[in-house]
Length: 294
Image (cartoon, rainbow, N blue to C red):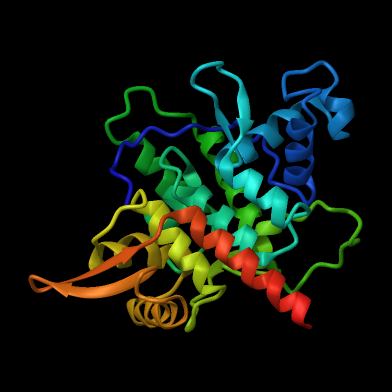
């Protein structure tokens, strides 16, 4: 959970929620080696306007697909982006989006992290979300953002995940819907304007993604306390402790105790596990084997 007064960065998305195809385009741009987000021809190569170029860069940073080279200062594709480019270059797999969701909602300077870790309420309206975020950022902040900034941030945040109920009729070729909507974490009831988090009674995606999330959040460390894992991870997937433990036990049975294990030590239940990208690679390899066998 974020501490009150945690400094956040606002507005870098240029008010645009992520759109279909943007991350694929961003990865291809940097892979080409012929341009980057600051290049004069970036707009032409990405097929979007100047502000959208900035937005694509923001979303790639937030989801962990790019990182700054500490020696050259240049923005480069991260190991995660390289892995996805190899196994899911068009970002088709839902599990790819779950992994990006984990990255985005554990980025400590992000309102998306606040939304899944600190926000209180399973059913709420836009005004309640604005009020809570506004109150959070004002604690200990001598120069808090203006309320209009908070309103724009919440609008983008809710657009990222909100699945319209009833579903809106849209052109599938339009590509304006945010891909994170497919995770079915947040419903938006159009008539009342209310939003509601989904509660998952079973783990909503592949077990490897839970393992990825645990390793990612705890810096690939060993001996993760189970209660710390519950506090840090359940809210990201909208599951309870029982679902978390069951999924860990299923992962142990499938992948073996040398990859992940749940042990008792000095009266505490501890999780030991492999590092984060191993789990995503395991998913892709298993997925490819399943498709090849079909």
